[in-house]
Image (cartoon, rainbow, N blue to C red; front, side, top):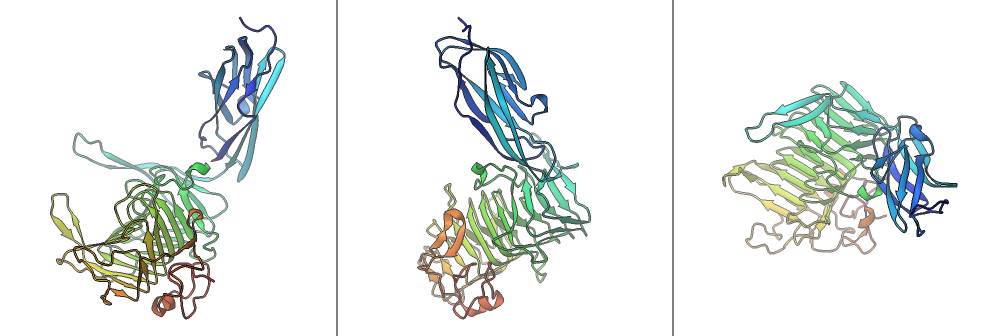
Length: 470
C-alpha cells in the first residue's frame, strides 16, 4: 500500500561535501541515504537537481541517473542510497560550486545541499605514444607523452595537471617558478631527455616553508600521505643520460619512484642537484641513481617503501640532509642503499664502480635495525665516507662488511641515538631540544652549506641534518 499523503523523509546527512577537484576532472563519489520512517510505502514523485541539466553535480538513486528521476517507490521503513559526483567546468582559479538534491513526495518537498570546491588548471595531455615492442605473449609497452615547448615556463598562476609523460626535449628547458603546483595523474611523470634541462626555482625566490609542490591529482584529504599515486614506467621524474635537473625549495610527495637518473660520464658535473627540499611518501625509491651523479644539500627524504636513496655506482654526495624512514607498510630494505653490483637475473653479478658516496653532517634513521645498506664486491670501486653523521646502523655487523671504528669510512659519527624530531606525523623534521643530533656536525660540511633549509646560519657547532635548531 502506497501512502496517499506526503511523508517527512529523513536523510543521513543534510549536506554532502565533495572534496576539492580540478575543473573538468570528475570527483570521487559520495553517498548518503534517503530514509522512509513510516509504516507505508512512499511514491517519490520526483528526485532532481535544483539546477537541473546545468548543474555540475551528478547523482544516481536506485540505479537511475539524474538530473531528474521520477516515480520511485520507497518501501515502508526502508531506505535508498543516493550517490553524488561533481565535474566542475573550466573557469576562475578557484570556484565554490553549490546545488541541492530536491526530493518531492505529494505536497512535501525536502532537499540536501551539495557543496564542492574546484580549481582551474593548466592541463597537459599526451598527443603521442611511445611503443616498446615485447615478445609474445606479452603486450607491447605503451608510454603516452607530449613534448613541451623549447623554453617552457610553468608559473604559479594556477596548478599544472599532467596526464602521461611531459617531455623536455633535447636542447629544451623547463623553468618551474617558485610556488608552482604540479599534479601528476596516475602513471604520469616528467621526462627530461638527453640534452634537456629542468630547473625548479632557479631564481631562489621560494622557500622551504612555501615550496613548489609536486604530487598526485587526487585532492581529497585521504590521499594526502598515500604513496604510489603517480609515476610511470620511467619513474616520476626521469633524468635521461645527458640531461640535468636542479631542484630548489620543492616538496615532492606521494609517488611510486621520485627521481630516477641515468648514468653520466665520470668527471661530469652532477646531473641531479637538490637543495632545500622535502620528499615524502614514495612507494618504491625516492631517489634512484643508476651510475648518476647526485648532489643533495639541506634536503629531507622521509618514508619510502624501499629506499630513500638508492645508488648503483656513480657518485652521490649529501651535506646536511635528513633521511628518515617509517614507511607504514613492512619493508626489509634500509633507507640508504649503496651498491657497486647487481644481479642480472641469472645469478651473475654485474659491476658499476661507486666512485663516491659522501655524507656530511647527515641524519640517517628510521624503524629498521640498520638504515644504511652496503652491497659490494671487490671487482669494482666502492668508496663511501660518513662524517659528523647520526646513523642508525649495526655497529658489529656479521659478516664484518664494515668497521665503524675505521675513520677512513666513519669520522666522528654517532650511532643509534635518537634524533627526536619535533613532529614527524606533521612532517616537521626540526630538532627537539633533547635531540642527539644537536651540535655534532663538523665544520667541513657546514662551510659547504652555511645556511640550513630555512635560511638559518650555522654556527661553529652545527647540528646534523637539514634543519638547524635555533
